[in-house]
Image (cartoon, rainbow, N blue to C red):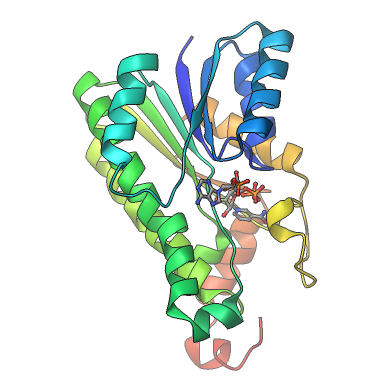
Length: 245
Ligand SMILES: NC(=O)c1ccc[n+]([C@@H]2O[C@H](COP(=O)([O-])OP(=O)(O)OC[C@H]3O[C@@H](n4cnc5c(N)ncnc54)[C@H](OP(=O)(O)O)[C@@H]3O)[C@@H](O)[C@H]2O)c1
C-alpha cells in the first residue's frame, strides 16, 4: 500500500478522508500544527486499522523551509506516493480589504504555501514516475465575488497552479486531482450565516476518496456544484456586477 502525506490532516474535511485512506491500508504521514489533535487521530487510526501513522509538525507560513521539510520527510518516512493538501484559511473579507497583512495571510496559506510544499513533492514524484497529488481548492475560485474575493482569488490561483502541474506531470504517470467543495459544515464555516446547500464532511470525503481511486482530474463536491458554478461563471459581467451574491 502507498504512503500518503496529508497537509492539514486535522481539518474537518481531511479527517474522514484520512480514515478512508487508513481503512484501505495506506501508511499515513499526518502534517498539521495541532500536535494534540494529531496524536489523538494517529492513535485512533493505528488501533482501528493497524496502519503505520507518523505525525509531523507543519506550519504553512514557513515557506522558505518547505523544500527541506519535504525532502527530509521523504528521506525519513517516504517514499511519498500520495499527497492530500487540505490546508486552508478563510479570513474576513472586510478586514482583508482594509489591511494588506490580513489579505497576505489568506494568500499565503491558500496559495503560496501550496506552491512551496507541492512543488518539491511534484519533482520527487516526476523523477520516480509515480504518484498522486490531490488538493482542495474551492468553488470560490471559479468566479470572483465581493463577499470573499481574497480567499477566492487565492483558490483560483491554486486551481491554475494545479492545472499546470497536472499537464507537467501527466507524461510521468503522476496524477493531479483538484477538489472543489461548495459549503461544508466545518470549523472554517462556523461563523458564516449566509450558507446554502451545506454538506457534511463525510459526504465530501466520500467524493474525494472516489476521486482518488478514479484518479479524477476534477471533483466538484457535492456534484451539483458543477452545475451551479457553470451557471455562475456564465452570468454576463454587466449583470453579475449588479448582484450581491
Ligand atoms: N468548509 C468549507 O465550506 C470549504 C469549502 C470549500 C473549500 N474548503 C477548503 O477545504 C480545506 C479544508 O477546510 P475545512 O473546511 O476542513 O476547514 P478546517 O477544519 O478549518 O481546516 C483547515 C485546515 O487548515 C489548517 N491550517 C490553517 N492555517 C494553517 C497554517 N498556517 N499552517 C498549517 N495548517 C494550517 C488548519 O489547521 P489548524 O487547525 O492548526 O488551524 C486545518 O487543519 C481548506 O483548503 C478549505 O479552504 C472548505
